[in-house]
Image (cartoon, rainbow, N blue to C red; front, top):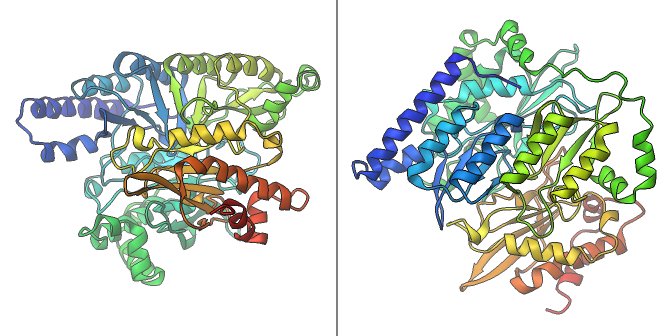
Length: 550
């Protein structure tokens, strides 16, 4: 993984000192709340219902065991013994004291971490595929380009105060696991007709109140022009993006109102003036790729008889392997997921002791690294098949081996009314009710890939618009109700879910989800997926079942 140089470390240390001074001035009354607001947001600090919330950046989801131990220490010393992994691969603390936030940032800086630009109207943390570098369908490892983009975006003076927040995602595989089409800019590594690798560029995607699928603005961009083209897009957005209405300030609205062709012409004109002076050299790319070389795999790992023996003799282990591990491009290895979706725990939460267990297991089984995913889980990317049984046993002891990755109980959930001052309805409690209901279904593991996403308000932090089953909390005269959408997807065939019908009261939403799954089981054709069944049959059979008694 990327290691800071002296310039990186100096920048982070100076930023910590700067924010410490700003916080002290605010606490002394020398800065008012409005003056401090912009400063704290640029350092990842929100004010929530109960306490400040600090969002820590995890660039493209990659963490070392040393960083995990620091996160555990911070959770124990400055918070309530836990933290939360988000859908953008970051981590959040929900209970820090304002006066101690500079101390937290100073401790993060000791392990090459920070909270810069994790909030505010700026370029946010660049995200990527959690299987980058090890998946069999990869064209090229996207992480070196993510790091190049991270360095370009960090404290970029021209784009410190954009019309609205701005998010970039990069995928290097045939299968899009980074939701690139729902980002302000999405980048796919692709090959042209000559076999050269470059980028397909999407623009204008986004979720929230107005979900929009990004459009291809450039089918093929040479690597050397990566930063100049991104800069041109940002300049046009910064110049023409709306600042009079925050709900219409995202680039997706600008692209939609201007039309893709006009927007593209504006970008191309700007790009023409700057591209020759911002070329990305081969030397720069190779320098960055050197930070992401593959570890020293055991060439004899594929010669192992213990793994198939354990699969045959232990059904629980076999179930975990089926759902919580995936193929690796190196024979004898697999990627293993750490489920942060135990049925009785808030999705994405992890305790200080669990973090330390994950750090120890990373050192023991996966070259000292772990990755965060878009669905609020973690993954060990490089585990020998021969070590999977031991790994599973250790995860099982600490409630991190729930065999539900990709199943209906692998639910994305926002904090909802439990923490968020913007929420209209609860999410965590509803998730628990759905889990309890689905836990009684004998066929749960036979349902295949089903993604349920639950948001407590229209901001859609849990991406309900692209859930196979999306659930959105709404307020009806002080009561919590939930709208349901079906058929969304953030993968290659991106789609925004269609609303099923009227919202459902809080005490009926869990049974409504069970009814939807029951319709799927009774109407699917052989191994037909949930999404394929929704496309084929439409919403009618689901409506009949969910609203049968209304």
